[in-house]
Image 1 (tube, helix red, strand yellow):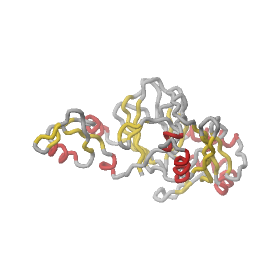
Image 2 (cartoon, rainbow, N blue to C red; image 1 turned 45 degrees about the vertical axis):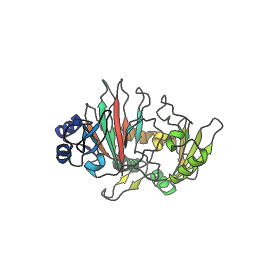
Image 3 (cartoon, one colour; image 1 turned 135 degrees about the horizontal axis):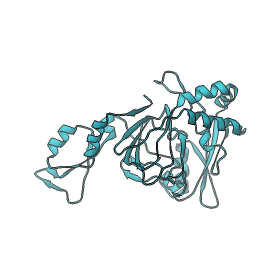
Image 4 (tube, rainbow, N blue to C red; image 1 turned 180 degrees about the vertical axis):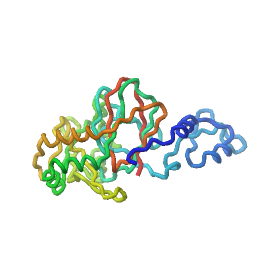
Length: 303
């Protein structure tokens, strides 16, 4: 399935002992197997070779066998622990456009795991879309345009500030994104991710990505062509652009209709405290609806 809501009782039981403290480590680890990792806490002591108390945190890799992959992208986020980050911390009154996570980066995650720590009082759903349905409908209405862009590929640009700006949905600064304040090192890391860079006078950077695919067929997905791009999210925006790889402009009417198709195919997921949502990132686009505060959803990206 494109999105999986696992057995709620099991998840609530696991969430209930997230960061729990146990007095007997042998008993705890033998019962929980590899679903959790051993952590630490203030005042912890070693008694007769045992850590007291034993602090356990969730281990997605241990539980599901999926190695993690570091998030790279424009969304402002806060690192929580290990592979865990907050979801986009941009203004809650704004939507997050539909996307495949890290779709423009050379190495993108195969799975995205979301956990609801604080559900919003209103709104804030995470809608998702079966990606192949967008391709099917775009081919029905615009076969020539889809064929042309698939053949040429797409070229994107995105402008990032130096430092984080949580007032923007795409306000992550390049220093945070590349993990360095050194421009030379940032260029090296950008190149390894498949990006070109142009430094701006205000200290920001313009990244150039392409050519990238419009659609893609992944092994193990029944030969379906996924709408594996971020054309709608970056075309004609203040900080970004999307064109054909040869520089040709893409008609705004085509982009608008693609946005409408994505919305028409969307499925709404309303959060409750403790919910875990696992998305196949190769097969689903996802986004975020506007909400009232507070809302806190955590995310892990996995290979």
